[in-house]
Length: 320
Image (cartoon, one colour):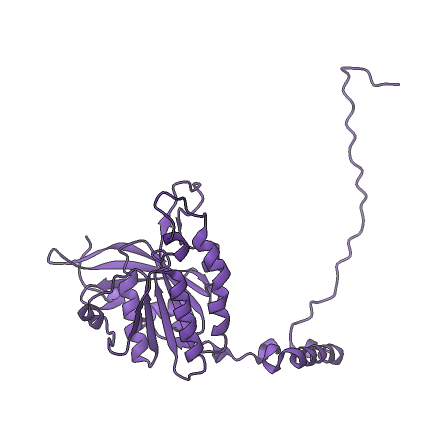
């Protein structure tokens, strides 16, 4: 018989069966050598032996056998920045990105890093895709040994990558550490884009596609070497960002951010003035991403036009 229209059905209370919940008395097994049974050890040894037989001795190992000193480090010369990175300085054999908007001191900070690296016995190779070399005297002011600095100017990103690959191949077996700077990803053009006419539309995400296809060719050869790469990237802003999104982004798509082991974003805090004259800027460095230590730490520095960079607390002058 159908239920009469308009008459509400009576709500039935759910039947809950009370069951006795027994608490487990089993304690979690600690991840230690004591928890490794002979059976587990034997299984691990079999896997290690099989992989090494096919791919070589260095292809596989137990994680506690990993040499922590495989990450070479050089100091930035600023204790607060080294502490911010978390491993005592900038890593070698890794991919580092330094990004930020215009006029935040990216190029000046890179010159400072080159001077500090050279003082620690590191060969530096600077690839300039902006075709705007700084004056020799200004580079000297930041501590750069201009005679030992290797410099290239390339218009195309393809040429910059090929030059970096050649440098890695020649120096990967050297005991002398090498740093390769590429400044900048945003300014570099692609050969395919310059071959088009001014009235021809460009291919969407062309640079991102190139980086996605070729970054691995630079990163993979870095393993086991003392060669590091530093990308300098000028940030862009999008007008279509949602309120909860960061409107700033690094050009080159997601591939560069993915491959980078360390990404440092720079922002300007203000100017430094002495007697009414602007003598430098205040900048903030923040670890946006890190595969080598804890991310999201930051350090404030003063970048003086005279060539000195130091922790902000050590700087002199007044705000704008």
